[in-house]
Structure formats: C-alpha cells, structure tokens
Length: 337
Image (cartoon, rainbow, N blue to C red; front, side, top):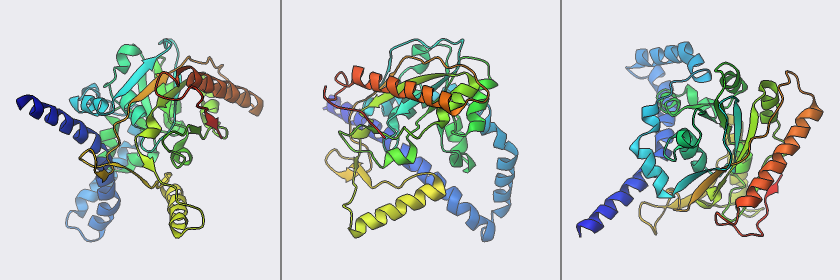
C-alpha cells in the first residue's frame, strides 16, 4: 500500500509540474494585462504600478542583452518531474564546438513547444552535459518580457526575445559558444498541429537564415518527435459557424499578440478525464549536424535562398533518419510549406 501511495505521489507531482506551466503564464499575464490598467485608474496601489512601469522602462535592455539567467532555476527538481511526465529526451548526433556560435532551429512548433522548453530552457535533459561549453538561449515572443514577474521568471531560464536585436547581441557580443534556439514555425505552424501530422511552415521563413549569414553563426536543425501528439487540435469544418469564429479568433490573436488561438485539448488531472493537461506521449528532440555559414554583412537574396535550401535539405534528412526510431512510420513524409 505504501508503494502504491508513493507511485501515486510521483504521478501527482509530474502532473502538477506540467500543468503549472500553462496557468503560470496565463494568470500572471492576465494580472499584468488587465490588473495593471485597473490599478492605475481605480486601485489604491497605483503608485506601485507606476513604479513597476518605471522599472520596466529602465530595465528593458536586460531582456534584450544578457538577461538574468539562473543555473539554480534551470536545475529545479520541478523540471525533472516535468521532463519525466512525457518523458522528454534530448539526443545529440554531432558535437557543437565552443569555437563557434549557433542558431538551433527547432521543429515542429506544436501547441506549446514542450520539447523546446524542457530541452533548451532547463537542464532536465542535461543540455550542458551533452553540449559542454555551449550556452543555450531559447527565444520566444518579445511581448512576454513586458509583463512584470513573468519576464523575470522566463529570463531565469535563459529565455530571450525572438527579436533581431536580442538574438544578434547573443551571437556577436558574448564571444563564442552561444546557441540561440528558434521555433521558427510560430503561430502559422501551431494551427497545423495534429497527431500523426508532420507539417512545417518553413519555405517563407528566411529571417533566421539572414541572421546566420550576418553573424556567421552555424545553422543546426533539430526535430522534436512526438510534439504534435500531446494535444488534440480541432479544426472545425468550413462553412460552419464554429469555423467562422475559429478563424476570427485566430486572426485577432495573431494581429494583437503574435499568436494563434488554437482549439485544443488534452486530458484532465485524472487519466481518462478531459482538460488541458497534455497527453503522456514521449517527446524526443534530435539535434542534427551543424551547417557552416559564412559571415556576410549584407547577404543578397541568392545567398539567402542557397542556405535556406541547404537547411531544408538538412531537416528533411534528419527527419527521415530518425522517424522510425522515435515512433513514426517508415513511410511518414515531412511536408514543408
């Protein structure tokens, strides 16, 4: 009985570790987005709110430059429970030399990019042991860094804005041995998420290639097998009122916040219930071979296109080499749009 209770406790801790990650951002974001304007207009604590905004204005360079990375936070036991829930694994295929800087591109985006967060935003899968002397910076939406408390929480994990200013600083002003991680599919790829589907929104994404050329950073493909399987994403039939509202909210969310509102669900706090806890499905992130990139201050379109095609070929090769090993059919194809 004691053994069963211990198992139940371990499972409860895993579910808590995963489920806390979603409302932490949502709740703190709502407090910041709705609570701050309210306190300015009506609240008794409006001086504190003004001080908070003043601090953000004074400290804005922090999140675009060095941040406030904490190895202690990145090694929290909480992340180990998070990692073991699915479980999430990180696989290295080639060494990354600390003599260079890197842009690691991660696919697919999925709904919440669990694989990218655990593997690159924490030490739960041992990034620093697999890639010694390489400092990872996971990039996300810059708007997050204008929310008090949330910005400090994510900065402590080594997370930075996915802006040219921030990424270029990491790749040019901090010496070598740095790796920025970009989930390039973004909102457009998130709405394509569905179990059993492997679609990348990549052909029109050239910004990361230009950044690599301008900074001379090597491009590194990576793929998180199983990322699309942890949630069920519903796309309503064309012509229905539900599809009309779905498209409306997706366009509004992308325009205002840079995100698409996806109609997804997972399990609840118990295994067979409905909710927003992701399903337990293994996620394995495979990091591929670095692609050397020359440093060109003003690359022309032909050069950008050349390295874009090289990268697309590399991610196709990585997917095909490892798909059967990590739960995909040997005939599964990677679709790039």
